[in-house]
Length: 254
Image 1 (cartoon, rainbow, N blue to C red):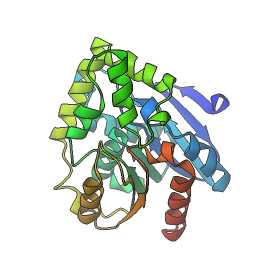
Image 2 (image 1 turned 135 degrees about the vertical axis):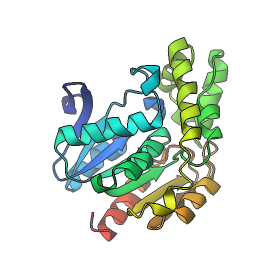
Image 3 (image 1 turned 120 degrees about the horizontal axis):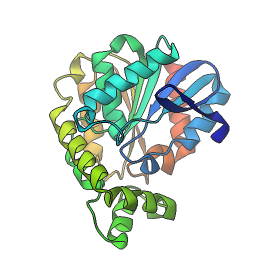
Image 4 (image 1 turned 30 degrees about the horizontal axis):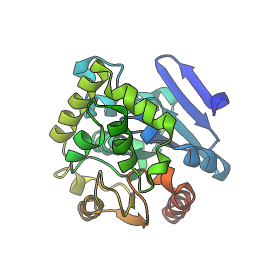
């Protein structure tokens, strides 16, 4: 991954492959929203995979909200000189992708959301644990996935450090409030971009009824389920996730 990691201006990002850009937006905690499987697969299939580091914890509190993050993504896409992109987002990243699509539809050729917030917001508050002891955080991090073993010691350490960092904690709560304010229910019926919804049947953070609601409200969406899968389908079942996404991209000529 390292040789594909770049820093230019204010942006740090992963980039691999050539072709139609797939811009991937991670969740609040990168460790719980890891796209390695996607990042390795699609560059071999004629796509350029780009994963910008989102400034979730590095901007002023006034810019710590869904709308500002969506604008950051638009500025990044412009900076890279991309005409249209496929946006893929997980959890908070899905919400940012949706909000970006609402504001800048001309930039988005296709949209992919998995375990996305944007409709059901207790997701934000509950899944990102408050301060607590290590065992509590280990349990909470494990609950994000169907198989708790996906939450490796590195991931748990990352979540623990974030939950015990006062500034990050305040920003996490600020983002959770922002997500509630930026509920997308009224916007979705007006968003006619082709949308692929990939969801874990056992997602306890954004439960399956959320995926059904997204599918109902978005005019041009297709919903795919992955069994024995929690909140991070692309980490828990990368092969199945890639197969579904590739099939959808092919069907939609993207």
